[in-house]
Length: 356
Ligand code: FES
Image 1 (cartoon, rainbow, N blue to C red):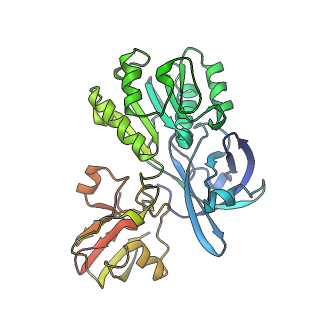
Image 2: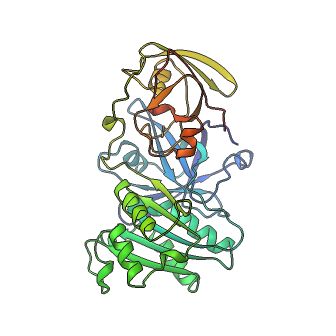
Image 3: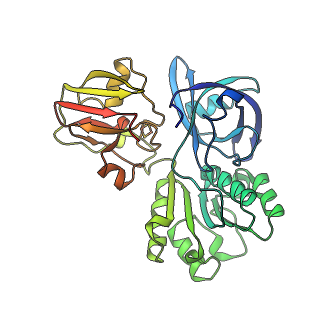
C-alpha cells in the first residue's frame, strides 16, 4: 500500500463541465505510477495553502482504470474554499495530492451487472466505475439512475452520452429530474427510496437483478435508497455507498457529546513506524486536532468523519468517536477509529495508523 503522503502533481488538462463543475486531470510521473494506481470508485485528497491555511479536500476520480492520467471532478460550492480555489487553477499548476483511497470500489474482471444510483456530483465515482466496467468487461452491463434538478445541472453529460452511444446494449441510463418535466411521470422528482420503489414496482428497473448496487450522493438519499433496497430484499453486502456530505451539511459541529472523555490523556501515535506521544484534552479536542497542535502531520482530509483518510486502530486503551459516517461495523468492532473524531476515554491510549 502506498504511504499516505502528499506528492506534487501537475495539472495537465482542465475540462469545464456544465452545472458549475470542472474536471482536473493530473500527470502522474513514471516513478509515482504504482503509488497512484487506483480502483474505480476511489478518491484523491488534494491539498493547498489558501489564505495561509492548509486546506484539504477529497474528490472522486472520474477516469477509467486504463485512462491516461488521473482526473477528478470538482463541483463549485457556494463559499467552498477549495472548490473556488480550484476554479482559479490553470494547466501547468501543481497541487499536493495523496494517493488514491476509498472502499467504494468495483473490481474489474469477470462479468457483472451493476446498478449505479448517483445524485448530483455523486456521479463522479460512478462514472469511473461505469467506464471501467464497460471497457474492461466485455460481457458486463451497467444501469445508471442519475438524479439532478434539470438537464443543465447534469455533470459529465458528454461523457455519459458517449457511453450511451458506444455501449448501446450494455449501458442503460435513466435521468430523474426534480425541476424539469419528463414524459414518464415517475421520473419526475427527487431520487430517493420512494422513487426507487416506484421504478421497481412499475418494472422500469428490477433491483433484484443486479450483482451489486452502488449509491453516491448526500446522506438522506443514501439512507432512503438503502432502506428501500433493503425492503425489496437486497442483502446489505450488495449495497455500497459513498457519502459526500452528512445530512446537516456540517462536520464536527453537529457532533454528539461523547460521555466520560478524559482530559489530559496520554496518546501514543504510531505512524510510518515511528511513535510520538501527545497530550489530548478529550473534552476540548479530538486526537487529530491535538496532533496538529503538537506539529504532527497525520493523514486526514474531510475532518468530518466521512472520508476515512484518518482511519487508524486502537491498540490499547479506550476511545469514542463523535460521529462516524464511513467505518463499517466490523471495522469498529476490530478497533478501528477515525482520528478526526476520536476522543480518549482512558488515561492512556495507543493508536496505530500503520495497522491494516
Ligand atoms: S479525515 Fe475524513 S474521516 Fe477523518
